[in-house]
Image 1 (cartoon, rainbow, N blue to C red):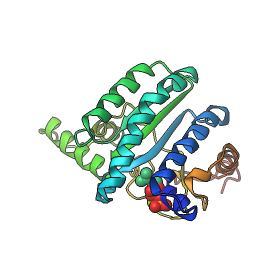
Image 2 (image 1 turned 30 degrees about the vertical axis):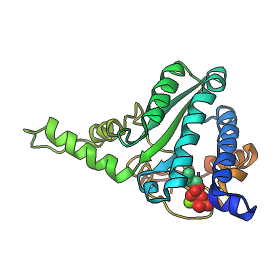
Image 3 (image 1 turned 180 degrees about the vertical axis):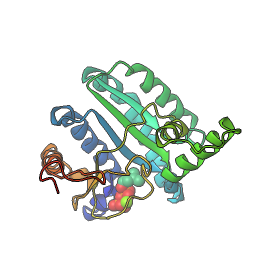
Image 4 (image 1 turned 90 degrees about the vertical axis):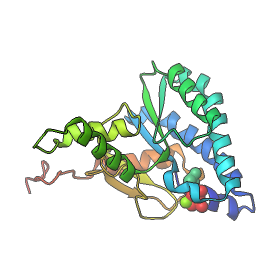
Amino acid sequence: MDGNGRWAERRGLPRSAGHRAGVEALRRVVEASPGLGIGTLSVYAFSADNWKRPEAEVGALMMLFKTYLRAEIVRLKRSGVRLTVFGRRDRLPEAVRQAITRAEWETRNGGRLHLRIAVDYAGRDAIRMAAMQWASDAANSSLPPSREELGRYVAAATHSPDTSPVDLLIRTGGEQRLSDFMLWESAYAELFFLEEFWPDISAHILATTVEAFRVRDRRFGGLSLRTGS
Ligand code: IPE
Ligand code: MG
């Protein structure tokens, strides 16, 4: 969800106004997702490297997460959305941690969409923690873990109940990089880099991107099922 700050700066607004507009965009995307055949939606809200930002911006973001998690429960439940948060929890303010626990519990039965929000997340740290846990669990094993097995450890390392691979990865805001997001899970993800800033993302843009994803020829290293080549 990149481009909130630039969206605000273009309008002469503080960056925090961009983050608030970003929340609106997230609502639109969550709303539109089930109708587009999306069952799991993972969004990158705050990376482990975002702690480097000025304290005021980090504080505003933490406040926004707390408000979103508290205020959104009713709407999410009504729309059948289950919300979970993945990443590290131990560095988050206590009030944010509590809001996460509450929102996850309240929305646990949502079956239309699984919304996963990455907070204090880094893909390499997930793999690092997974390796460490596996090594301690399998101290006497002479075989390396299978991909599936290590994948379960990667998910567990970020408190995620979900081990599924990423099919479609969209980055908004014009940059073309992954910035440490879901590295393990994105091995065969189809990548889309959009010029639009995140607060400008509409249901229509999402639908167009999903359509473009559907006609991509996904071979997973094999041969095309479409043309045989
Ligand atoms: C939102 O966009 C992503 C978050 C870290 C919350 P940015 O804050 O990175 O916006 P730009 O890239 O400065 O425009
Ligand atoms: Mg950015």
